[in-house]
Image (tube, rainbow, N blue to C red):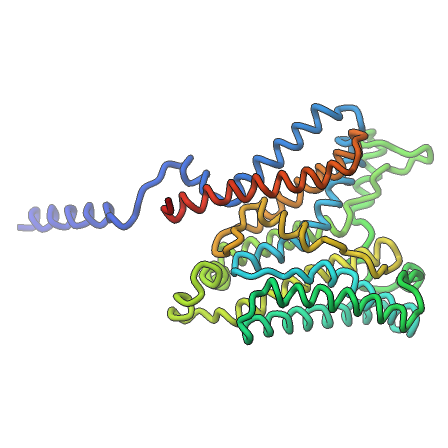
Length: 377
């Protein structure tokens, strides 16, 4: 009887392991369905392309690499926020205006009112996040399309940046932040470079180039690159390893079904509007710290570039599907192409042509993936 029971148990275990609700997939099939696959392949493609067409231009020297990495990081920071919000099924077109507005929130108090730079930076983040949350609250309370609400915020913030800077300072470019930031304890977290001694050693060992005075051609890793990597890790971890990440996917996939299952859809979306605004503020503050000034026209059209980077990275325009890592690859493609065109000595007009082609290809690729995921014909 004991043997019969064991056999019956083994049979039940075999049936359990062969659950028909769990479909086995080949590893290549699973890889194809990863949202970041297209962007990773695209990044390798453009890197190989510029290695072929501009091999001796300096693009792949140490200073050239950090050149396009910095451009990629600047866009990557806002693309991470944009991709999280897109996965939750919403857009924020005001992030470009937020870059210029947050820069003024740092520069005007620090330069004209004598406020310490660290307090001005905290003021900018508090103001930026508050505006982002307000943006999200209007979207979820009125149930208007986020495209319309954030488009209105785009013009409101751009207009406020111009009007307030002229009203308070009689100019649209506020300089002098660099002098005020000297000795400030918080400013180095948003501008300059880190790891300088390592690069001095690398230069002494002739692993990277040197200027005539012996200093390395690359002083260190730009702080914005460090922020990009940290945000990519945190954003990806939250999205793929936490309950809140599941809430983001559920909110963008089917908001009504998610609400019925107890997902706080409205709270998730409002919080993500705040996160997106914080990312844009980080971009704006880092530009002020690097350039030592704020300008009212900073961030122009960055909202579209961030969304395009997220789409290239695999985020669906309809929500419910996407990847933070993919958005980072999308931003990397931007940086490589933008600087590659310069190193290859081509007209910068071709950059916009490339953006359009990449967006079209990404949307077509995403549509094919969506059909495969949902079984849609």
